[in-house]
Length: 310
Image (cartoon, rainbow, N blue to C red):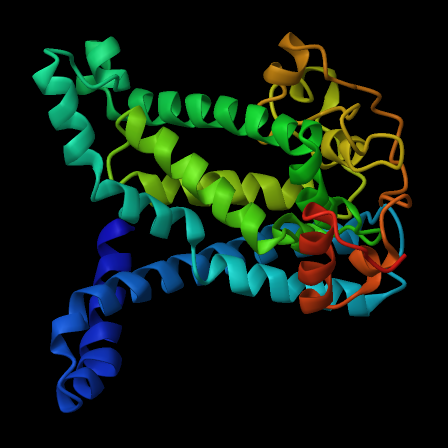
């Protein structure tokens, strides 16, 4: 599959990108252009995969009818802007350039980089086990980032854009303020480099976690049973997090992929019978029904303590 993906990417670059770059004398930027093409195609692949999985489920057993398609179209715009740019991958690549400095500093101190392979050498010969370990560690880091989004006042002002959606669908996963996305990408990329995630595996981890997040936001009446609910985050489990009583610092069900973190740290709610209404009525109406630009401006003004519309 990776070979096929690389072949398609190479063909598109050779026939669509390289000729105009050559004609315009921009071949010095060809490597950067290939990287952006790679990120764009991976994002498009992720969107297509999510649509194939989630859209049939929403048609099959929706929690509620979608009455306002306009706000869903805004969420679609968020998804296209976020995933076709692949902020986490771009942040990972940017941070990758400073990794030698970090490793050089540790070497001077006669210390080993704190990668998972250094801590657990058995992972060196077990790539699938190493991949699973990377996912678990990054999911743990995402749990605490998510809790910080709810617990830190200025950060909640940005994250409220995500929680203001009353017509939640699988498109709602990427409904975030741009600054919030940048912080998340830098956090995720830094943790990945710190634990030694190989560049070739990082996009696959991003794809896996984003598919899981999109499914958890889907407008579908679906849970995984008593045991499954404790192993993987389901649409029902995460919908409780978006419920009207779960916004802000007292929320529940913060996990992205593995509910074990909520279980261990006392933030889990396994009420399988509940599919609450979503939204954040205490937040400005513009965050719920405004367009992309209006939501970005209103959230930024709130973060800075400036007056905002009701």
